[in-house]
Amino acid sequence: MIDFRLYAITDRHQCAPTPLTDVISELLDAGVTAIQLREKDLDDTELLQLAQLIAELCRNYEAKLFINTNTQIALEVGATGVHLPANAKSVDTIKAQTTDHFYIGCSVHCFNAAEKRKAEGADFVTYSPIYPTASKPGYGPAVGVWRLTQLAEQVKLPIFALGGITPVRVAECLEAGAFGVAVMSGMMSPTDAGEQARHYLDTLR
Image (tube, rainbow, N blue to C red; front, side, top):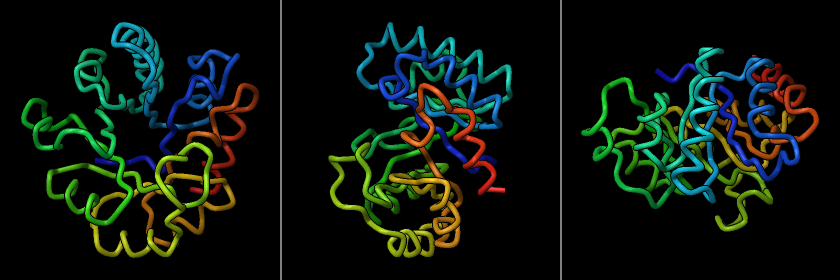
């Protein structure tokens, strides 16, 4: 069951020089209950080491941890699930190898992809980029809130709006039918990650 509305996505480069583990501690302290570890430039050994540290933090706070792409590491560290990029293998392939309690989120950028992931058995999707954002330069122009509304009407899955989501834009996304919001740049701050997270959580309450 997807019971979180704020989905924090990591980027240790954005929060440098503050260690990512410190930033995640701040987010968890502020009340964030779902983290996606998305550090695509790490090799498996480095990712496993970082994932073990963050998994322990999340367990201490009873927060959910999703590992981007790497199902094996997600299982190894006892993560809640895995988050698949748009071009990843099918959800049902992973579902066949895991338990009912292993959740799978998927990144989508169009209606057809969202429908396909739903049919495969995804538990939720992130839809992006809703607004123009420097974090998603390779995914074309912003889709806009009106497309989010259309997607939410057609695809009956929890949809997290992603891309350029600031606290003041949260209400607009929820009104458009988003289940919640996914945020990277807005919270991967070297100085005030916890404070930023509180702003998002306040608007989601």
